[in-house]
Image 1 (spheres, rainbow, N blue to C red):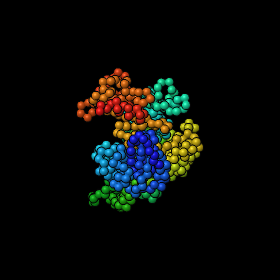
Image 2 (cartoon, rainbow, N blue to C red):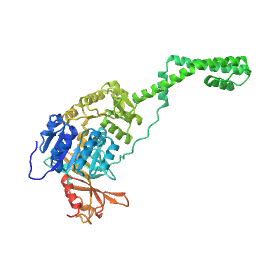
Image 3 (spheres, rainbow, N blue to C red):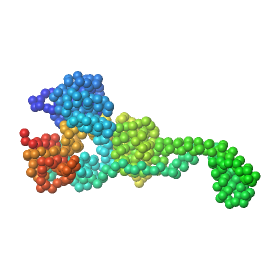
Image 4 (tube, one colour):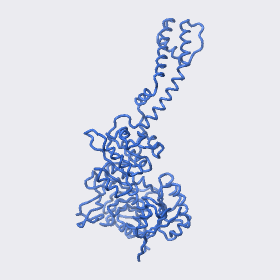
Length: 557
């Protein structure tokens, strides 16, 4: 439902029909005071009908965004275009079309493939490529573990925390409530903080080395997979080898070791006839040759088959032994794969459960030697195979809300040792009202959707390339941004304390240029640190505060 305003509002085009497109459109039309045209295949779809009820939102139905659709959407005077379908290939095609129609227009593209997305961003000016699952994964892990949420700030390891969460040194209070219960962002001293920005002592350590497979475990599976006839053949060959060595030792008067050496070589590789050998030695040689011809190929085939079956079983049957303190991740789609990568980077032990052996993240898990359980996580025996009884958390990340609820209930019903406590459940939920009710019936659970966690970052990126991260609080949002200074700007020759404005902007760091393409980050600069027009200001600010700061850092007209 579009309405008019005397003040010129910024104009955006959003392509997509899903929860991410819905949430980004809502943010652009409300928080960022924009007029949004949403291009989608069916206006009467689930999210299309919801979008149509929003103020300052217009729906344009098109089977696929083409030149005619963009022209009708008003690409000529649009400030930015966001491509939010979950289709990397389709988004590339549409991005090239947008660039052809309006070169240099601000473009934000949703991508899963990091390498492909980076390549596209390099060849399209004023383009930003983001992954909803990559943005959401660290936040989901923090929620599951009851930790503070990390914030993207160059050169600083910062988190957003509540006063009751474990965190390092406080940097700044981000939000508080006034006497009427309304949110106050970047409040002055004196108000009790609701959320704050603090330093963290948990670095991103990178992917861990792949652990070696257990030889004992392989031997266990070999014993289980070799049938009794193969064991009989192995025993018979062993008896003949030992008996033959003893007979040759007695007949030729040589040591037992020398006789055993000759017999084993005869059995494994055969030997040429020896006419001058004793009759006993010739008999033993013939018997060993006949037995080895019959038994050795059988043993070789059986061992290879058992080894392959053992490897497959070890890959698909979970940890195999008791495991505690780990995280169980259920569902290895886009979000589950990103969450698994985040856990591996943090050196947190993990077991994954997936119904579909061909799911996107299964090869990734196996490449990193993560225990994989193939099965239905709603079944208690599947969860027991994943050692849920000793897990610290379970993250149910399938694409179905009801399935995630069923898995969580099943996990909480499994007995656990008294000294471990209850498992911390996190559910991926798409409907916010439904998620809130689920948290009421499952004590201690957390419910979030990847689109809800990533939408603020997408919306902020649509506004411009300076935004690095976002911190939402209730219906407000703070922006982490990097603002370049220019010659003769208002802030030139001022000092660091002049940047921060209570309620609007807080300076976090400065980026100082060096020779070549390198730069230095000065985190938490002293109040008297002098500013130069070549510096970049890294700040956290309200939307209004960021706009004012950009004006103060810009060159005069």
